View (cartoon, rainbow, N blue to C red):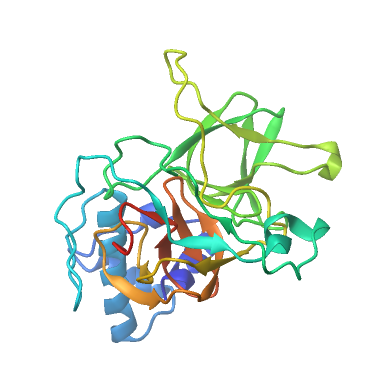
Length: 283
């Protein structure tokens, strides 16, 4: 439902932040105009919108599920990052140049902590600053080149991103749209936008570390769950939200994008998984 809502908003030139509050029924009326005629669908969407806004603001409630307890706040002590997912197929990791039959090779998704913002509270959505290094860059409505152009950005422009697809599309944070970070020789263009690793004072910041490194031209990446206690699928990339599913050790899953703190968005289903955890089995 939420994916359908986002697609309809894009068609109307709107973004999630443009949705009105429902104090006087404006959101209900908008959903009806967009074609959501079922009262149950509208109620579920309004709940999803509230939860999405809470996540965007970093306001989330601790949620407990049967048989598991969530801590009220992350521990201040440094915790080792334990990989809970690994790549089972080297052909997918390295692109079409490697045979997809090399299933025996397993590469841990993260040998080092993947958090690009040291000390970031787990309830806060991550973001990364990028800078345009070509003369211009096109902002598309969707993460594919044939989608509608929304605007352009000039060389030197900096912007925040909240998500990166495994084939290189950056999702803008404060405005709707996507930018392809690297054209890979198309029209004679290579890298379009690069991660900023220097702050406003000129000091070096933590280097960008991703749970899924490299370029995956298929637009998805296959991983295997390696955590002995399984892997929780969550509604949003935050620990303090409800669990919507579980994956057992040895199961394969597909990721289509990631944020900048180790979370992976699943392909073919709704939900996020954390590629590394502070202690084995904690998620």
